Length: 451
Ligand SMILES: C=C(O[C@@H]1C=C(C(=O)O)C=C[C@H]1O)C(=O)O
Image 1 (cartoon, rainbow, N blue to C red):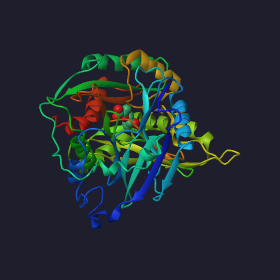
Image 2 (cartoon, helix red, strand yellow):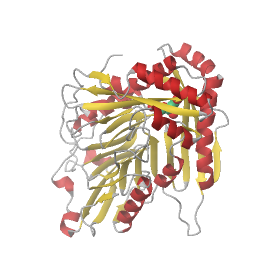
Image 3 (spheres, rainbow, N blue to C red):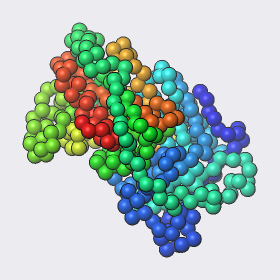
Image 4 (cartoon, rainbow, N blue to C red):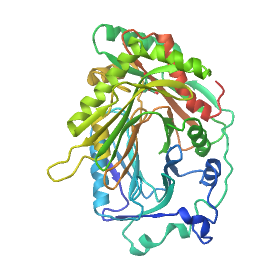
């Protein structure tokens, strides 16, 4: 594990305060006019150094980096959790907002696999603008041993929302094959189906990757705007170069209340909404998709139940309509059990316990993960790992990093995109390939690629 805090004795300070009345204060450090539309807001963000977690009109946008905690290996979650706790315990937080996402905040992105070559990360931004239930606040964070520097407001030297930088649509984006080409990936599906029929496991999720390269550095603000507008029910994110919009909430926890949204079972939309909804109802109730969904719910509840005093799951799945696909979805809701000392596991610890669910791993988990390692032919990196944020009390939101891409270099002109499909014994390679293509559509259209 590498923890790169700037100094061992450095102190984290966080101050959150409402900025709703900003427009009335012409001396406001954010400028005198509040943005009026999402596009206006996005165009005022800096073109680099932005961290984002947005769903509909609520979310958190961070600027800059106070510190980062990088971890790797099987204990990547526990090590990051412990380092964050230590940082917060030694720090001081002034939270005048007291809403989910206020106070000291770290954004995070974790690898899918224990043995990934890539690291996992928690990032503490310098400034963070939050919006929840119509309230808007700012959090200023610093990590320093120097009292004067700690109390100097970074907004005095930097007015993050006061200038317009026009959004740039990515130009001339070309897509090329990743680890396996389409024929090679379908061969892998065939091999997985054979192994499932032989009894190696019941379900395994097979993913593929493609590379999308633009002529110029990609403007993440533009992509975030398209994803947020097209997928308002998804969690749209950009954390350490991982950019996407996922429909699947792994776990959120707030004052002991946990929530999760399980997806599995996918119908590809055609553009005719009424016909799609009717057809999806038939397709998704068939054996293949309903059994995939059952595995996903069972794997979540088996992992979560031991941590909870109550846990309820929707008795019947519902259809979650997105622009590109319709999923079978079930929401779970429970109460975390308190330890004897009144403490509860952090949201990251809960995420670590339930990861990987059958939605991205398979059933049984260990057997499915072995099949994936043997047949997928790639390191998934942070795709399909937990992505989200956590506060100083350990509360937070962790989604599963789906429908996303990772920048391949500092040049920021190429993203490696990923999509996966749950494979069961009666899966067909051709339709799984089409499903994976439908799951690449959000990122490709966010990059302006015609499909
Ligand atoms: C693995 C992905 O999606 C998951 C797999 C699904 C399925 O197989 O039906 C549906 C939703 C997600 O849980 C992905 O988008 O990459």
